[in-house]
Every structure is written in structure tokens, then in C-alpha cells.
Image 1: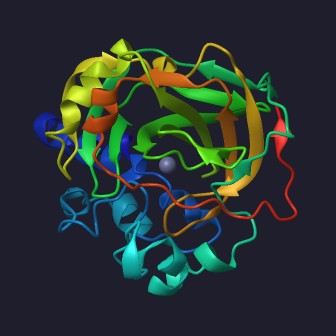
Image 2: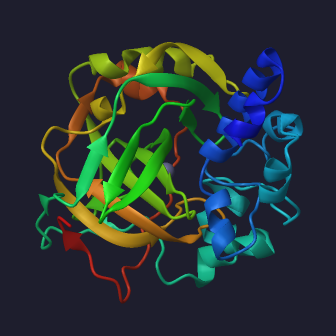
Length: 295
Ligand SMILES: [Zn+2]
């Protein structure tokens, strides 16, 4: 999509690139297209919050194709459109109630974390844009070449966003905050890195993002700094892996989850700056899956 965008005039190309980045970076729905119809609503989408300016601006065939015509529905974290009802809100959300490999999950104390040695990170500072899609605050990587490699397969970093409290729980207990770094392979496969935060010292590396949260809107807005995604992850690379799903409608499965064990810190003020509370889907049954320490 970015290649196509560059064929347009420079100013228009920039706008299209940003909006398409917001669109595709908002993950997860597009990725579902390999196994089920794409839908316009997911963890990162604004379509159910506003008249979807990003999509209206996207005029390429690719954008149209990846966001066509499956009905979507508004959803929330509480009440009649809350997680217990997601699977009934739209046919395209059915996996939320019928899926057998759903996320998040509880990580029991009996499964020890281990080095995530199978993941190679290739991260460097890159331009970013911030968007508040009504469900979370999301930071999109605009261009750049951040990626991870798992078992020889490359997944490009699209965006990261937060959940409050954490979605994954440790021994049945949530942490105050969780970040998800969403990556997508060229074949549409998704890999998400998750990391926890407790309340403590100011997280200086994230202050610029927390400062920008209060003015974030449904339209992705460039931030005046580059961002190195490695600051989101603990230096201790131990954790757990399992096969799961998107944690928001349409709850598509086939997502490679990698959750870091070491808990980082944000300050009370930083936690308060992320105002989407609650923004966590309850944990789902592990079922027949295996939760691995390390990978
Ligand atoms: Zn998430």
C-alpha cells in the first residue's frame, strides 16, 4: 500500500501513507483475511467510534478490499456490548464465543518463564503517529523497518497499544497495565509481544507518549519524535509463548503470543494518562493448548 501511495503527489502521498498506516497498523482485522472475511472493526480501528476518516481517505483498491463489506458492530468493555456479548454482536465476531484458542489467558505460577531465545528483535528508532480509537491509545509506526523474526519468519512491527488493567494475568492476578506490540508477516500471520507494568518510578522512555495521550484523536497524528520500540520491553527476555487470538472483536485466531515475564514500571501519573479503563478482555480458557515457558 505504501508503494502505491508514493506514486501520488508528495503531499497527498503523505496523507495516504499515514491513513493507510493507521488502517493496516490497526492490525489485526486485515490479518484475519487469510482465514475469514476482513472486518472493519478491531482493536485498533476507529470505524465504530467516528465516521472512520482513515478509511474514507483510503482510496486504493487494497484498502477497499481489506475493509469491505463484512458488517461490524460497536463493542465495549462493559455492559450490553461487553466481552460476554461480543460473539453475538455481529456474525463476523462469532469467533469471540466459538473459538477454542482465544486470548488473553491466565499464566499460572506452575509454568515457569524461560528465555524467549527464539525471537530475534530488529528494532530502531522510527517515526510514529498516535491515535485514540475509542478502545485504546495506539502508536503506529509510519514506515521504518522494525521487525522481529520467529523461527526464521519475519513479522513487521505495525503498532503498539495499551490495556488497563493487564489482559494476561499472572497466577490469576492482573497487573495495572499491559502493552501489546503487534507484528504482521507478509503472509498475514500475526505475532504479538506483550509486556506488563506495575506502578512505581516514572518511565522516562514513555513520557513523550503518555504526554501525547490526552490530545490523541481518532485520526492518527504524527508525534514530533522518533520512537525505539525496544524501550517497551524488559531487558530480561524471559517469558511465555502460546497460540492465541486477537483480544478484541473479531477475536481472530492464529496469533503467536509472546508474553514477557519481567514487570516494568510506570508512574501513577503515567498510568492515569491512559484513560481507557477498563480496556481488558477477561481471560479465556487455555483448553487444549500448551503454554510454553520460553520458545
Ligand atoms: Zn492488545
